[in-house]
Length: 374
Image (cartoon, rainbow, N blue to C red; front, side):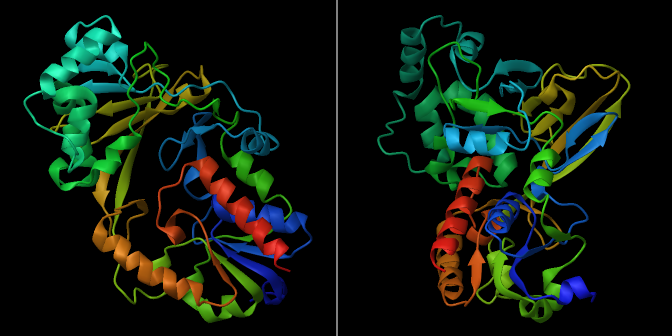
């Protein structure tokens, strides 16, 4: 180990994703010494971009920043200028194309309805015989929201591919995040502020870590005792069950696999995000990265996203928040509360799905709490 690593730091931050980078930035501003380590060969976690054919490729899937919080919007804009990108995905069901989120354009394409009253009446007609009062699972919740036709074509198979389970086995709350609008509005998010950083997300991470010491390709678990010994405090953003050596078992995640292709054409699919909602197509989404930044490059880069059951070698993406896993999480959280000098933060350490603005807000709140406790 070199002299820099042997130095006693105020904080060792394990993971250079949005939580770790934001926490490090705030503590460094406050005069604290921080060392950030990351097992990957790049910083930024899952918002990392790679420049390919002069296009910023979202290496771990599409990331669209959106928030209603002006403070958080101003916070990220200090590191990069954001463009006006509006997320308006397209659903592809066996070659039939539908606007997302579900809105009057979608209803018109499927049923020919032209007014909200007609669309609501059609949904009511379709579910009238189902006798659903309190939805018991995702299928019933989705049918109540958009009727049986749309559920079968645009939700059922997509969701079952994504989660690797039958829709009737999934909890109803998963689908409640899905926007349904009775207006002709293809904007997926209702948030006031939305966009993509011009030049890619690496600009955000580089800005956050500009005055920090970062060591990449470094696995905390290969020498856990050493890394704990060189800092007064630890911020851990990895898997909480891994930190405690899976003492109570492994928390379950869904993972993803990506296949990237370069095409010698200007435009492959005409949209940044296309969802494939039939059962026969093995992937769930195709991203065409240049459209996130209104690119005009002569070539284009696409990524196909395949759902994958989590395993030790796969990157964990979506926590499976069922009763079994949440009970296990509570046991790990009790251990975490008793772990002196360790702050657990971020989607893996907290075992919860976070949007980007929520991760930043959490890191800011925990850094402020830490500074107040001194």
